[in-house]
Image (cartoon, rainbow over all chains, first blue to last red; front, top):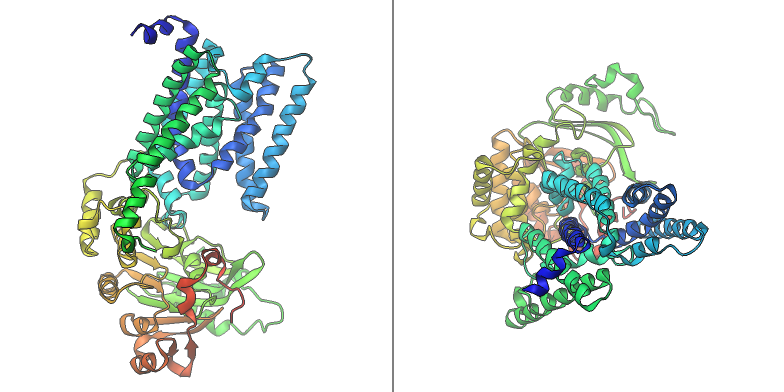
Length: 286
Length: 304
């Protein structure tokens, strides 16, 4: 028991625990829609686009999440707009915007004299370094995202499942699309310090992908994704503390491990699927 | 915006190289029908990008109609339905749905897309899908309540799917899938049903059941517009038939369709003869086997 309780005496560990749990929940909730829409690439792109915002915030001496939020939300809305209006394929629009914004971040970064460890941690995450002020900002942001999803989960679900049917019956599908992109952007901002730009897509996608191996019902899927998200965040954080290794990477590795277990043994995983196919191949509809 | 066309010359769209008076007769009848039509289109042209899908479409559909939209692949059937549903804006012309511009009365409209546009692996059960029909009237924040559950249960019972309510939709047969989506439309309790291929690729029993339900809705004064490839079904089960091929080819009561039974047998259900001797050849039956990538683009792709 002491092994579990001992780190809780440390302020930075408790802050990291709160932040990781928050990230686990917010990412799982928003990530459920990301996975069902098949837009994991958008998440990755928005994460990279947050980088110039973080650097700019550092240069301007304002909280990093404000800079990241502005950059990420702006890029998210630009992705939505460009892919709708410019006649480009969406993955092309994303590829252009994401490389461009990330390059701008690196450009800004290179103008700073000397080595800036703080900024470097945003690439790979360092949840143990999170300050009390930042934590409050992230909790407010994270709870805001969850609040919006709680209000609009039905509409988001309908628009994700059947955008034409939803739009025809009066649901504002296009506005929801932009709102959804903004939610993804804010989710990423909340997660940046915990896991870093490069790994944040895992936080977004892996818990929901794991839950997909366990259930075929939407609400259960979201709840299970949140459970996976929290479990891996807490477990990963303790592991990284005991082993003295990078926290973000450890959290993501725990998630990946849980995913592989669910993929193999889950009721909708590979083995179960194989068995179902062997038993009743004719029952699988085309 | 509910001005008769004749008194509003600014809305009179003349296309290059055309006699500007050619549509006058159309428009007089359209203006007359306008006042009590649930679906009203006047000289509507539309398409995707630069590609024309429909031109000069003028129709009025009375409340309580049971209307089949037929025509070959690429004729613009789905496009017409999307225009009515407010999913596509017309390039020119005017549309009114339930007495208002498309989309304004959206909560009184239920649209069912083609089966191949649906992600059947999506983690929702039959009951979840039918409950979605209630979402627009609930609005944000409100959860489905007793009335909603009752409407969902009733819709599921009508399509005879109550015992499958907890089944994930991917495990259903083609006919069952169509039943679920009709149940969603029924649960929405709309005044206008817009159904894209509701009876395509399903068994005869399901087809009879769905048509009986749609007939009952029409008898209650609801308007039903459905595209179909099944000409025998259009002739036998719908009151009226609208034949389109880039524009309206024919529009009339389906009982004027000449001996559909005989023709259907002789031509394997691919041929329809309407009043005035218009013959429509339906080339649609390879449609269901089309590669998934083709499905978004089959309107107006020049297959005429």
